[in-house]
Picture 1 (cartoon, rainbow, N blue to C red):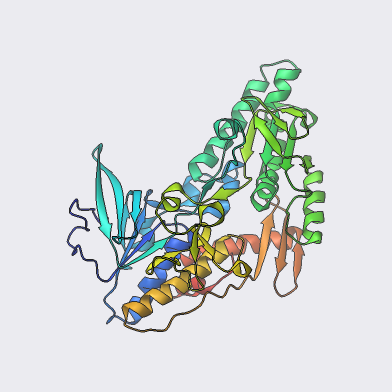
Picture 2: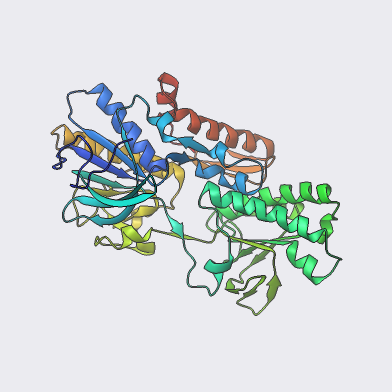
Length: 429
């Protein structure tokens, strides 16, 4: 792992960093950009480019599988892939650190590192910077939501959700049937979008298993989705909305729509209508926003604190600074896209191509042209919905098989060799 120097550079590297691309965040977009740049550099060794990937963790998280961890179907370790394994022999330098401040004007990033229990700060200069930090949960100023709701933005958070559900069942067995027991056995997903539907499907299966394990009648347990808009999966085609609603109902999920969460307490929450619902576990999936460090860096920002970028995914007011995924928003509103893993991967490819061209002295640049080939939404381990750009519509087991293939193909793209390179070309996830 590369070490940060207090003189403003990386160990053994010049502070000028005239050919350094610094990628902040090792999620889908950031990691793909690093691997793509490394691939391009192998093909054209004459381009003198230094690739540095920085992340607060020493592992990559397969975020699209976190709902499985929260539902107890997968472990936190299974969705963590060490950067040391992924980046071995690629030439990409990895720095484990936390970003404290972006200094776009001076082309440097202030970071904080820890070693042997000692925390220290340093700076990393760059020629090109890619913001790929992912996002943080948006709580929209709802009183008590941040304090009392669980989130699943990381494998650790997802594990805590799974543990809390188990704890609630264990505690409920010691109580007589009544209001307190009912509260412990009420589980709520806040937000009925893509993530909320996938999480509710996992919860439904886990609840069925725990009811059997603890001899608790399924009728005693309540599982709800609370969606502020008039339907689950807002913005998706009607047939997907209807299928999801029917599947969730079969799994025993109660869907509440058009009545947003207004306030949250330790063991209950209230809706805008005034209705109060007791709950033992509330997981919020209702929105995201850019991380605070990116919002406060001084670049022009748009909705959710995202950096405003042009058609090349470059900050409109800071040349050489790129932002993808949840960190960037198009200056042209007609180019706005919902943030997703497949879009972040495609954006990473475009940014990598443009940076590599500049590093090689070329003037040409590629515009980002999204290719949304479809989406697959799981509803538990045995049901899913797939809507493909080709017009193909899949549900049930066929869609589930496709979902599993996509996840395996992504994991293969993290490996070395021809098969990994072939999988990395894929835009679908």
